[in-house]
Length: 477
Image 1 (cartoon, rainbow, N blue to C red):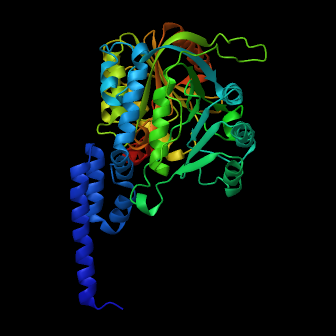
Image 2 (cartoon, rainbow, N blue to C red; image 1 turned 90 degrees about the horizontal axis):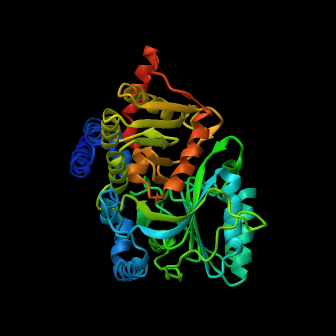
């Protein structure tokens, strides 16, 4: 048992540690709200603040960046090879796309086919068709994987292709897929599939468990890329789940494949063997037994891969969305399940509304986390005052992540409008420039609007107080 003197020394050391961690929070903090919250907690409640900060407060994903440095020669050479291969398809940078060239190092490419996939049934059907037709490689990456009928259906197809000689790589997030059974993993491995997990729980990745790999990607032969909001589980095919994916065929698949390679390298310390020759899609996208192409397919899209994460030197996701809103001339339509934006995004939306733009945001009426709903409502109340219109989706849970800018720009992917997606998670989004595809996205969102009611300001004083209190947790959500 400690003597009072030793206890005093231990307490003093603990408080001194709180000061050291508070200094680190001030040094690394990127938002005023987050910095103040961490500093006050560490200084005045170090017994609570220090463990929380050790787990959730580190801003940089050191392990990932270290892997980038150690694999610098391999990854840099691969990146340069891809840039060279994409040169014939590269679109010149303009005022809208130039920042993305700076953030993501790879160009926007032309000559892509894009197919809008609405909800789980259409998406998984298209995925299964692409997997069955794979001849060289399949890369699978999901945040959530469950051992259920949806995952088993894909697993059987993947195993069949692996046994036919196709290289199959399967990467899942350890935290998002914490319920995934060992039986399922062994089934994949025994079927000839290379399996790894994006794991921030390991000792070598300690102090990084706040970072999640939220990307949802399926990549086929370096020619087809599936990007969007759907994970690999039964609920994503249920009638009460609203989600959106996009299938991209053409040279734009390569940057998404490079994103997968960076994640795979961090998890395994080796690069997968893949094809890197940029190709125009060899055939139209089949969507039925007859091979007919659905009306939701556009054949001449320009596409850019927006793969953001905490390993980036700058906060590329937040900067990208803010830039897109600032560039808008006529409208900004957003569909997101979690709307807890950072200050730059709020400012950009207010300025867009002040310029007279049509700003509409769809959020779910029902959320999967009660505290998120209250934090969201505070932002809704605040932005309603600026003339921004909010719509609450009534038919089940809306999980899609879609941004529509003016008449030609669409962005579909995994990123939500919240602090976690904008600053903490690894995300993958497709930025698409095409008038016809944007019209399809517009029509899709118009159908969604029919399933909504327009949001009104919260009138209850007690609810408004609760909303404001829970907004303080926004940097952690």
